[in-house]
Image (cartoon, rainbow, N blue to C red; front, side, top):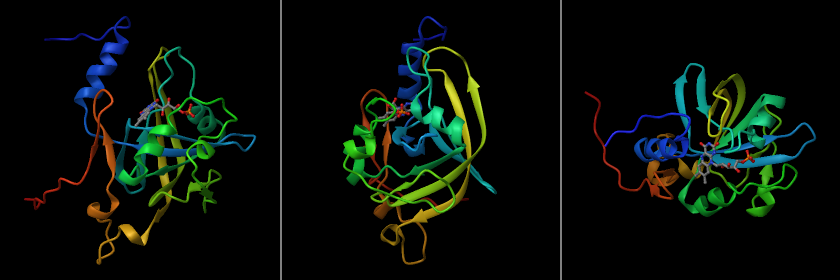
Length: 201
Ligand SMILES: Cc1cc2nc3c(=O)[nH]c(=O)nc-3n(C[C@H](O)[C@H](O)[C@H](O)COP(=O)(O)O)c2cc1C
């Protein structure tokens, strides 16, 4: 079959795109509003794009009616965010924090999570997450004005926090210990415990 995207079939396009581009890592993002409300939400339109400086990009899309999500509003206002790893033991909480709450209601309380202050940015980081990357915004690029259109949030990582529990003896992040989860199409997720090694040519 073929599918030609157009403004009338955005939902189908979204379903094909997220079914094909898999698995997607999940950024679990804390932000803070101007009035100090801390927000937490997951985003699987996410990846890393370079290490010098370290750059991550994620996309809080416009919601289906074309409005901005709290995460995007907060980042536009403050220019800062923190990305945490989404790991198997916290997968239920990652999912729960995708619930659309009013701006002043806390996803952190809802998921019974805790925060600790960050070192270089205002949004706090999650105590329970094994990794956190404190980020400052380099650029925000909106691509479209309708429902589910992208907003590329490009951030520079200014501080890494990595729990010793997920390091191997040489000090590198051990995927067997970190156990990230990722998003596939529909409501499917996957674990990362079916690993194989291949040396670079
Ligand atoms: C695993 C997962 C991945 C998600 N990925 C995205 C994404 O990449 N972009 C997006 O806009 N929403 C994504 N969502 C939905 C948001 O998490 C949801 O809209 C959330 O309420 C946004 O929160 P906010 O309004 O507090 O920013 C995802 C949800 C889940 C469960």
